[in-house]
Length: 95
Image 1 (tube, one colour):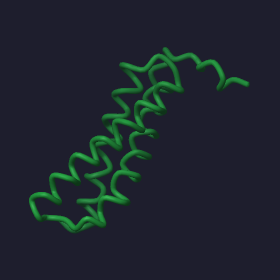
Image 2 (cartoon, one colour):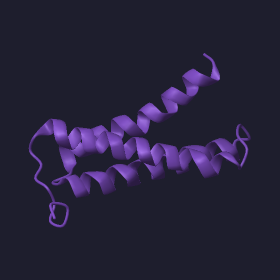
Image 3 (cartoon, helix red, strand yellow):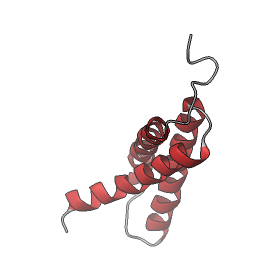
Image 4 (cartoon, helix red, strand yellow):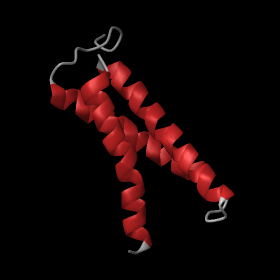
């Protein structure tokens, strides 16, 4: 598997976790967005930190990997909230 396949797999995990969070846990789109972002960034931070401590990656990965994973988690959570059909728009977003 090349570097492109590893990159896709790395972003699919926060996307799927965000999708699950948005569909099953969150009560609104706003909560889905925040939760998906947090799930993505925390998961990536832990994974990258472990890879750095094991000597597999450089510290420079810590800048971009959590951000891209957070965006993937956010997108997954919003899609999960939209697909589940049980969500209502949070106060403040419908203005």
